Amino acid sequence: MRTRLPWALYGVLATLTGLGLAHVVAALTDADTSPVLAVGAAVIDLTPTPLKEWAIRTFGTADKPILVGSVFAGVVALAAVAGLLARRRLLYGAGLLVALVAVAAVAVATRPEASVLDLGPSLVAAIGAVGALAWLSREQVGAPARGRRGVLIAAGVVGAIALVGGVGGQLVTRLRLRPEDVTLPDPADPAAPLARGLDQQVPGITPFQTDNEDFYRVDTRLDTPVVSSDDWTLTIDGDVDRKVTLTFDELLEMPMIERDITLTCVSNSVGGEYVGAARWLGVRLTDLLDLAGVGDRADQILSTDFDGMTISTPLALATDGRDAMVCVGMNGEPLPREHGFPVRMIVPGLYGFISATKWLTRLTLTTYAEQDAYWTERGWATDAPIKISARIDTPKALAELDPGDVVIGGVAWAQERGGVAKVQVQVDGGGWRDANLGPSGGDDYWRQWFYRWQAPSGSHRISARAVSGDGEPQTAARAEPFPDGASGLHEVIVEIA
Ligand SMILES: Nc1nc2c(c(=O)[nH]1)N[C@H]1C(S)=C(S)[C@@H](COP(=O)(O)O)O[C@H]1N2
Ligand SMILES: [Mo]
Image (cartoon, rainbow, N blue to C red; front, side):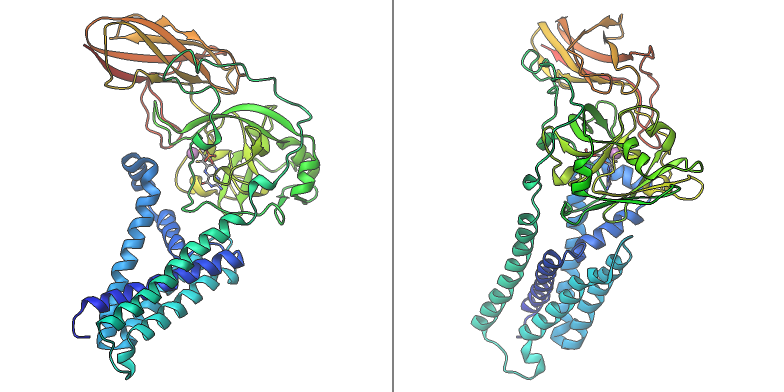
């Protein structure tokens, strides 16, 4: 082949073949993660907090696909270069491919709980990629050059291997160990039936209970972990009288409580989407801690997920009588994979980043002086109660409406502060007027609210604020999410024609 283009293509196809095969091996061996995702994860972990904040603000939930996409595009570009190098000498091209895989292997090997097994996919990626490149560029090793037709056929064969590998790997992973196959026990301490909310009454309001499919997702992962409940265990160790290890079945045999709790992310901006309300089923955290017997040194529960990611929770707050729980169920179903299957923590009143560990495998009783967790290492607060907040769901910002009857509505939350006692609405800086509240779902649950407004023509600014059951009004002082949660009032501007 004289022209360069086919060579660039060889490099890309060879690399995709290696990656496709790596996915199959990862799926079959429970190896932790694919090489591309490992590189992406390493990039996330190494990114300074301000840059990460900027990415979340700018790209929202698309920040992950954009990151994985960029890493992938970089890999494809280098793969094309490897192909072009192979045109000169196969060894050069192969060398670059091996170097690429080596970077991924380092990223894989430095994950917190990496084992030798996790290097399998990288090894296969290297062998597959170099093998495919050698086969595609066989004239470099003395065989007669392929004609145009031969190039197309060879490219097709290699492309098919890459595709079948990539898709097959995904499929195998999805089909194994399905959360739906788990049967949950009945709660010994059930929640009262949830009242019917204002969902039907106020068009555009957030539903009283968030469907699992609609529940926001925030975590550091680039994939959706597939963790088996069969070989899952929870270990409680550190400053305890005796180290305890429980299997999933043993956990399910413990008395279960059921609670309605609104979970909130510290990265949520005022009026943002990173908040959701669900009915959780699980074991009381204190029941588990009692099994191990907490010592008198610990001030922190350091929880670890299946991959070594850590979250720290203030021990005093988690054990002060609130309904902190180790959950297996969400809205009557086993936890979805996205939300931590098989087991996660939920602690009402604390932002998720210091409490809501998904894919939980370990609770270590320790001290803040001794051990840092993922976000606290990055400068986020260690003590972060959820701030009182009201959100306006309807009308939407910049909505154009007719004069007359307009229903303003939304949700408000004040977990572990006696719930929401009052929501007030203000138009154009005028007097604060009390909104109507929907039914209560308990103090740890959000409350829907609405206010009927006679809207005059013109452009208007609507604000809302909540007051907690323990009498604290929501602050108007603005703060960014870093380091302990955003504050300020949610405001929307609407145009009345
Ligand atoms: N293992 C693990 N658990 C985690 C996280 C994470 O990155 N990894 N993110 C936390 C954060 S910041 C929040 S807000 C909640 C979000 O839970 P959700 O995705 O189920 O809504 O999970 C928490 N648990
Ligand atoms: Mo979060």
